Structures are given as structure tokens and as C-alpha cells.
Length: 52
Image: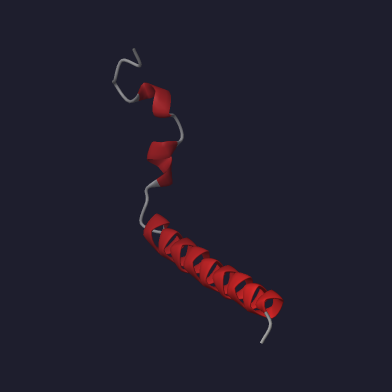
């Protein structure tokens, strides 16, 4: 195998691993966001904390 095809194979492998990683993280985020009370997220300015 030439150097060119080796580089192409490594780049494709890195792209596949990165895609799977981001897909997995996205699935975890979706699962954890199911339990969030969205009514509490509507107005974050009224949280009682001073923004300074």
C-alpha cells in the first residue's frame, strides 16, 4: 500500500471514530435532557443571583 492510501485510510478511520463519538455524546445528551424541567429554563434572569 502506498503512502497516499495509508494517509487516506487513517483520515477515513479518524472521521469514522469522530462521527461515532459525537453520535454517542448526542444520544447521551438527548437522554439526560428528557428529565429536565423546561418550565424552569424559560427565564434564567430571575434566578436570584447577581450577574455581577
